[in-house]
Length: 564
Ligand SMILES: Cc1ncc(C[n+]2csc(CCOP(=O)(O)OP(=O)(O)O)c2C)c(N)n1
Ligand SMILES: [Mg+2]
Image (cartoon, rainbow, N blue to C red; front, side, top):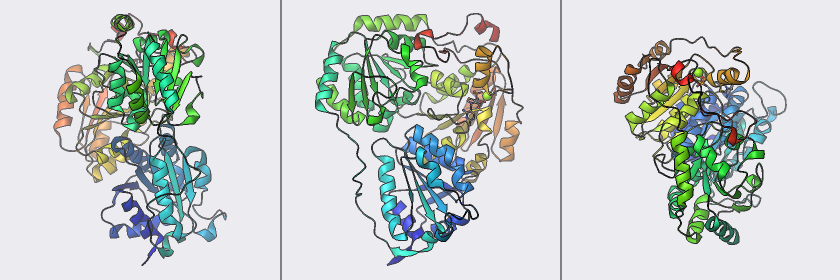
């Protein structure tokens, strides 16, 4: 039986197991929306801005391990997706973005709401398609999901002209893809695995760097086995935070620009780095010239393009992290590295993270810590970008796999609210906390309406410092405190929430923190907490830009007491 392109799209999405689509309609996707009522198993969530749709689909994807789906109309709808697509690309999140395009006869005529979205998104998608025939829709959807979710995941865009949505064709859903040009290697080369094992067995000061690849590959157990069997201490990248228990004795926390002193000292003094599912991003390595000067490097990654890209490596293993670690764990010998671990313990003791004990003003570190205490780590934390993000990484203890969702690569402010919304839709049983910056929150604040309309029970904690805080911190430290245009006039966020019929509390004093968090947690729906924190609190430790990891600065003594 013949079906329209729009029906074929919906049926194909169902075949792929899609349950939720985030989007906004417009003329060029109307035929698709018009068929939605025929497919009640597809839940469409009407967002208020397409950026929200893309970030929500991304948050959904990261929380569930299924591709997230967003949809937008042609022209401005499609271009509004761009930030979210680029973000998913940088952080390897599986996303399928569907856009309407003007009808085929109008393509290239600069008609109303035409934009060359396949051209625009070429460098920020893993692959994209302009579908010019209704007979191609099913095959394209099949391929798009396959490409988005396999190998190194990423976004795929499908652009469908309006008349293709209306055109009829036979519906046939292929059960496999035929993509001769698309390959990825799952199993690491056995010679390389053996070489890596030999290097590990010989090392006396090894360190693991755990990246988001562990989370993507769900290799938590294999990582734990590697670390424990050979007693190898571990540091993680920002996106690898929830790949290894935060309270494990071998876990030294995050490395890099705002990593712990002892994690960075571990890297700088190591004789072996085992980098797993990470890409040597400059926020993790700082200046690569002085990175891990004494270490040989093993690099395990599914994407061959990452090997030797930023840092030259001694033993590359291209493959799926879980599969490679399984093979590697069979080859490595048990060890204890006692001297190395006791040295690291001493550094940990001498250079702790700044205290979270509370004085008169409200400290952001303390707020994050109390959210941890209240949830006992049993929550998904979704952050904004900036200081709030770093405090959330440093002061929450991630004991649960995949409990930290953050935009690490592109770093778009405004990720927090829609991504938290997507995570909660994907994992309705989980407690989802959105840790927002007062700046970033205002970039996608309109999604409060979506949250209300769909009753998505996210808990929102605004770390309200009245500043574009991270940029102010750079002005403070590197521009002689010239705070040019980083001070924010803010609306009353509690009143804003009320206007959206979402309850909220403003918290100004330390003793109000715990009761407010409890209240938010007890409330069955969405809830907003506006934490008025110390405006000029800085994130420490910090490696100044351009320096190497050894140049990490701790919170200046005295400053702690001045601010606190
Ligand atoms: C879309 C976008 N614009 C600009 C920036 C640059 N930037 C990085 S952090 C930051 C400040 C963020 O302020 P806020 O959301 O209040 O977070 P805070 O650092 O104060 O916690 C800015 C402007 C960015 N990351 N994303
Ligand atoms: Mg701020």
